Length: 345
Image (cartoon, rainbow, N blue to C red; front, side, top):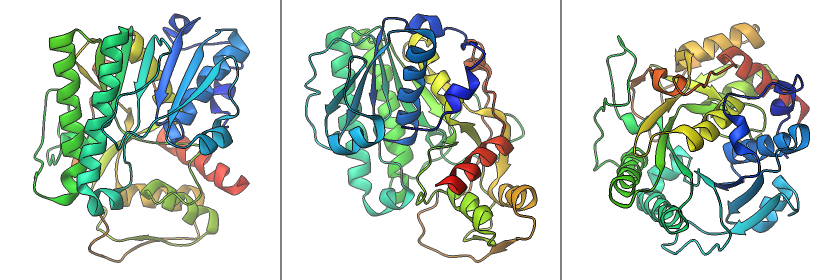
């Protein structure tokens, strides 16, 4: 199972605002074996264990063996359903669910670069399948988990980005397959809300991490954490000028569950810790300074790595916080927890 951050946060019995609405409900989580999916399911199981919520979970994943290894065997509160969202097929699940968190999506930059068609089609096929299920089963709420990359290239960070602003995306660049797919899926969600009355909203999620990140994860935060653990210099293959916000896994899990219950149909919400906005190079320097002061940052430019274009994505989280959500874990603490989990691995 995933990290126990959700246990640590709730030992005092404090629940996030709105959590009571999950009692005796059934929640479907697609992309269940990914980091956020595992955290969500672990969080819901914690609610059952510590607060007797009797919340049932339907975990949707491609590989049953992997799902059982990461989530445990099926039981009264957990059902595993296998589905491959890369194929244009109906989500053949008869079980009635109340809420859906749709996370299934390609996530690796190199994959976007090498498989742009698969990136686009998997995102659209998967979202269409889940929206059709939500429509015909009349679910109470669905959240499509998009990305801050849907904003495209933004160069002015003098004001935080609200959900109505869009930057530039070049549709004929392979790396653009990911933000383009996210935008298209967002548009599909809005269309199903407007035309079919599906109560679906969109979470534009900042890059999210914490305990439970795989030891071989190649995203930048994981590379920085491994450098701190091994006391090796952090090597950047760009100038590190890209700036963005981040979010801890448990904060993200709470936000997604709250959106399922309270989010407005067809609307988008930024999900990030507002104080986490930082450039890649400054984040590298922070990790060296705070966790491995005997190391330094080295810049060695390298082409063809599949990194997103240099942009400045400072997210405004006012709309999300108005629903009652408040992120609790700052960036330094995210890294402390991640580094500790790598040391224990």
